[in-house]
Image (cartoon, rainbow, N blue to C red):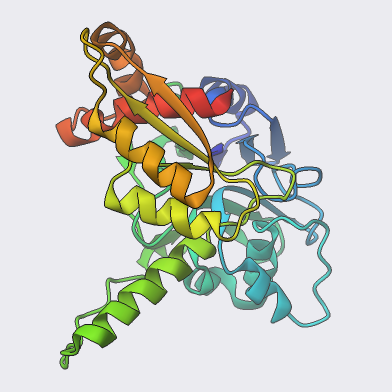
Amino acid sequence: MCGIAGCIGARDEQTIRRMLAAMEHRGPDDNGIHTAETAVLGHTRLSIVDVARGHQPLTGCCEGIALVCNGEIYNFQALRDGMNDAHHYRTDSDCETIVHLYEEYGPGSVERLDGMFAFALLDLRAGGGILLARDPIGIKPLYYGHRDGAFYFSSELGAMSLAGVDKVTEFPAGHYYTPATGFVRYYELPKGEKNPISSIEAAARMVRETCIASVEKRLLADPAIHVGSFCSGGLDSSLVAAIAAKRIPHLHTFVVGTRTAEGVESDDLQASREVAAHIGSTHHEKIITEDEYYRVLPEVIKHLESYDPSLVRCAVPCYFTCELAAK
């Protein structure tokens, strides 16, 4: 998780620095600012890929282009291998691939990305401009607004409140934006096949292969970074952890649960221990009380930036899990 912020049409570095400071929790490892004549890009970083050289904003990869990105590009290596020799990579960062892809295909390059992302690319070359994009289903957050003719954007609503814009709007998923084209939809959910699979064996095989491929392509972290997985003992988290454990030497698993005054533990604690023992992970537990739950609730809603009951309900144990993993 990283955070991005910026403005187009104004050299408002002071505001962007304040917005980044409000999102420091999204990226404690590094932060940076790139200032142009009428634009500012800012980034606060959580190091995942190319820990040593992945500083953002990414500049110097291509003359006149700067990038800030929150996300991961799963197919970056395949895209990189398919580039011609004219492209010279400065880092091993998955995000740098966006710059070189843009060089070749312009805004339409977004369609070739497989990942979760929200990014802003500033092109100061003749005929260039700004390109903002959000992943197909909106996994990564992105908001925008206008003030005095300038376009402001950030990863969080709280940071947008510091920009002084009249109105904040959520950047639509599966779209890119340039001043020349406005918002362009580049992705739509595929329509169902006219001839659905009728064989149970074929359907099971497809589900299995797709699930395994989905987990594998997300295991991009630098080898120096320990990888962890939620593991409540339920079907979904157990499958993800089991697949990851086969491909990672030392997987860490995490669970949050409760214990009654009589010492009876919640089902997730018991089930997750069975799963962890079966897959051979290094297992971590946190037992929370009702008082602790209500104590963190305001903080969870603040960072979640939503009052949706189903989101809040699952976000509270997720908060405690992340707190445990951070240690």
